[in-house]
Structures are given as structure tokens and as C-alpha cells.
Image 1: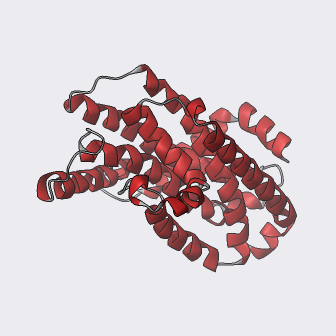
Image 2: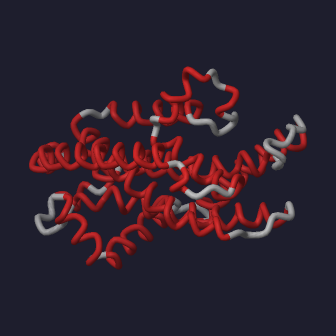
Length: 264
């Protein structure tokens, strides 16, 4: 199934992209500003954090970087991860009419949702670069590392959403549980705080979380200027975890796929 999906994914990029564009537009259908809301809402959230922590609480710089830059460089990839998983979990239910089409490969539906979230994420990468420019930090060669971390997020969230979107059809509570775990995960990943503030005995456990690798990877790219291969054990752990998720997702999806149409 994985081989078949990769083949379909590579040969049907235009079709998948069109579905993602349609999904993104449909999400804000009927509102006056339309798809602009997809960019306004997260932007306002970042600006609120900037006002609260930089202006209100006057947080001290972290490792000689303004706190808002240190925070935003981790929040923006987390937005992408959480949105991809949340939207991807409902991908099959929201497109139930496609499930009954025999020629349609249902396994691409989660990636359509992830692509939809990617549109906003690309905007925020540019927004983040602009923030660094405003604070006087020019782009560096390390920014190219984003081209590595984007596929990392895509494959990680695809593995997760293959599992959650399949189970969500049969267990309606999955959507609620995913939302709860996303909120819980937000505080388990060091976004608002540095790992140095956590007791050493918990470091190993926190680093096992693939989301930690991705969030810290963005900080390494924009803040610390560290290449991903300089963390070989973290990189190995991430890819092992991701391939396990993709493998489990493949098995779960393949086992449950014949029963989708009956339940929907």
C-alpha cells in the first residue's frame, strides 16, 4: 500500500493540489473575507503573544534572542503539526462521497488536508523571516534546512492521520481525543519554555516525542544555526518513529478500508 500510495502521490500531484485548494476555500466558504481568515487568525494569535510577552510581561531574551522570536520559531511549526493532525483526522468523514468511488484512492485524503494546512504554514515561514528581519537578523544558509523539515512534518503527520482518520470512522470519540492530545502535547513540547528548565531525568522522555525534533529543528534553523545532522541520535529516533507510524498507519488503513463505505 505504501508503494502504491507513493506512486499515486507523485503522479497525481496536480489533482491532490487541486483538492487541497478546494478544501482550503471550502473551510472559509460563506465568510466575507474568505480564505484570508486562514492567515488572519494565526497572525493575530502571534501578535497577541508578542504583545503579552514582549510588551506586557517584558520577557527577557532567551540565549540573547528576543523572546518573541524564540517563541514564534517554535509556535509556527507547532501550528502546522497540530492543524495537519486535527484536519487530517476528519479527512475521510468530511469526504465520505469520495469513499464510495471505487477508482478513488482514499489514502490521499489525509495528505490533502495536510497540504491545505501547508498553505498557511508557508505564509508563516515568510512571516517569521520578516519578523527576524525587523529585529535586524538577516537570512542565513541555515534557512535552507526548512526544505528538510517540511517533508519531515508531512510524513510524520501523514502517519498519524492515516491511523486517526481510519479509526475516527468507527469510533467517533477519536476526534475529541485527538483534540485533547493536541492541547496536552502543546505543553509537553518545549514551546513556551526551554528544555533546560525541565529536570534532567525527563529530558530523554521528552526527546522521544517526534514533535520535539521538529519544533527544536525550527529553532536550530532560525535561532541556534545548527544543522539537523549534528543531532544524529535525535534524527535517528525521529525517522524510526515516523516509519513506525507510517507502517502502523498502513496496516490500520488497509484493514479498515473495505468497511469505510458500509459505515459512512
